[in-house]
Image (cartoon, rainbow, N blue to C red):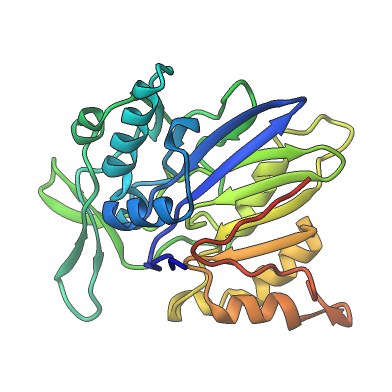
Length: 295
């Protein structure tokens, strides 16, 4: 038996099938190319089946595995005489980002691969901030996420380098972040988040709206990925987040991972809402190598 290697990052491969037609998309590629390659090999991933690679946002724990992933996918598709892989990227890429260290002017820099490096890896780059569908309309990629929930304020101490001013400026909102959606017949929407810097409530409210007609919103069947609720500055938001998830969205199932934190998972299972546990029995485990089959 071979074991997958965990790391602080996120990457998920999603395959949708309808009427005998299947399409696959890779959403993020984690923090290291070597880890992506080792884990995908151990899981038996057929790179040639991946038609599109989508990046949620420009943070290294989601983007640094991209060059290796794109190179492997491009080679596999060429060897099978298939169309080149589409690399779907947020158009707005800051030159440098980082986290300002507490009680200091020092910045821990977050590096990302450049557009040139990704283009060199292979595939066709698509840079956009607009919402759109991919893979023959099987999947929906959001544009920028609207911010309505007052307490969902982004990532504290996050900064971006302003080349014009030659200085670091506050950048808590990480506005280019996107999520991915697919709809399962007779169940509802599956929403996949990267980090959820926009706030998981903001994210799910937007996920429902563009895909709904005026008569009825599609229900959220499953939300999985980062909920951005780990860490001292975020944990004070957990109680309000669970309350609003239940009252405003009420997903059938939740699979918090990556930057969600154990306190978030516990609150989803056990926090009371109108006298009963908010999502008891509806919080799914998630970890490296986890496979979900939803029909």
